[in-house]
Image (cartoon, rainbow, N blue to C red; front, side, top):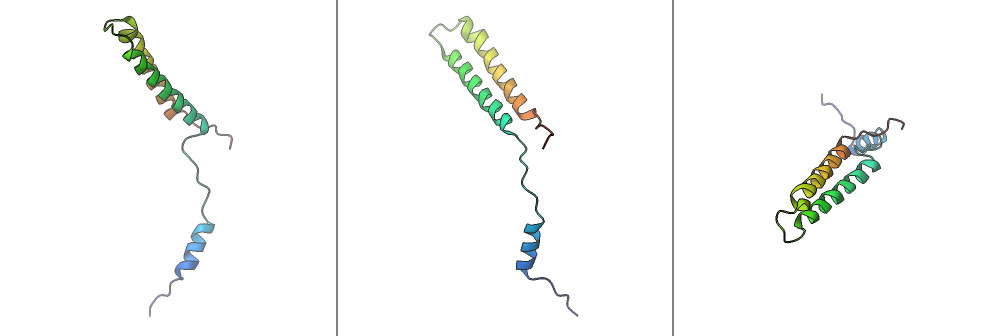
Length: 86
């Protein structure tokens, strides 16, 4: 005796009825912080391009700190958890 299976249409309808809404990993605030971090990193690279003076304080001290700060904000944006009140 062969087992009978449900038609594919019934199985698909049953599967779609039991699905839950998609929950995203990141919240809107995560994306906002990530965009801010991209802007800060870009600003740091603009500071690095600066003037023709190779050894200016802006190029060798301030700009790398700004870029690292931007990366830090990016890490914060990735690791920040969503609020639990949903």
